[in-house]
Amino acid sequence: MSEFLAMGGYAWYVWGSYGVTFALLALEVMLLRKRKREAKA
Amino acid sequence: MKWFWYASPQTFYPLAGTVARICAVLAVALTLAGLYVGFFVAPTDATQGEAYRIIYLHVPAAWMSMFLYVVMALWAAAGLAFNTRLSFMMARALAPTGALFTFIALWTGSLWGRPTWGTYWVWDARLTSELILLFLYFGFIALQASIDDRRRADRAGALLAIVGVVNVPIIYFSVKWWNTLHQGASVSLTKAPSMAAAMLTGMLLMTFAFWAYAIAVTLARVRCEIREQG
Image 1 (tube, rainbow over the protein chains, first blue to last red):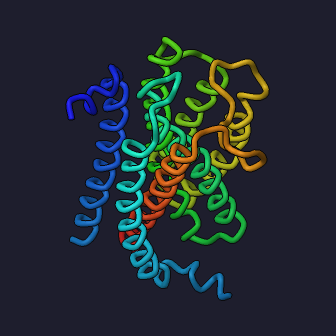
Image 2: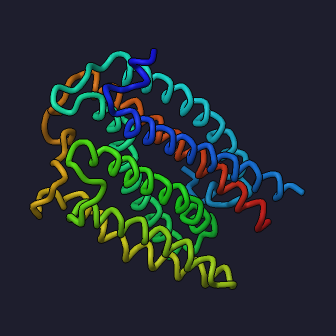
């Protein structure tokens, strides 16, 4: 498991890419949900 | 086909909701499948080690960034040609997602470049033209937001989107036209892909996942646009 997380020494590059990407996608979905709620009211 | 039937925002609204829900489910399923293949099935790259696994995000995001811009410009052009409100709404709904994928392509490319090239950023043709694409998306969004009159904002934005399309072939062919640090395409329509089958499968799964995500988010946003404008 820790070997997997280490990514052969490239952990920052690999998880930095995946973390930021999925965080931004989740943020977009959250902002859209908020906008939808406010449009309803 | 009754094309203009669906050009009416009111008839499009429920259809968009159904398609968005299906695509959202598809996006999650395809992402899980793509990550599984990308991390557990595909082997370690012989020269790049584990760092290459960034390409499962980078390449699909870069494709989406260009593709979404072309689709946005096409909707803008359709809006100018037919004067349909829904076309302009589609163009406006695509811009934030396109900008997001452009940023992701730049960010992941940067994190891939550091271990592979030894630098986070170089001002070479591919990277610079992709950065210009990000500014074009920002320009489109900012221009629309700065004009109060909706119809004028739509038409001004459409012109910017259509003129900016010239940048897309520049990005795509930049690796051929200039000597750049960025490698040429490993996957193209004209020749067999130059990568392992499992790597290609993972990349294609992530590409379809991003497609489904982009469709779902764009349609959800267009529904907000329709509801806000009534």
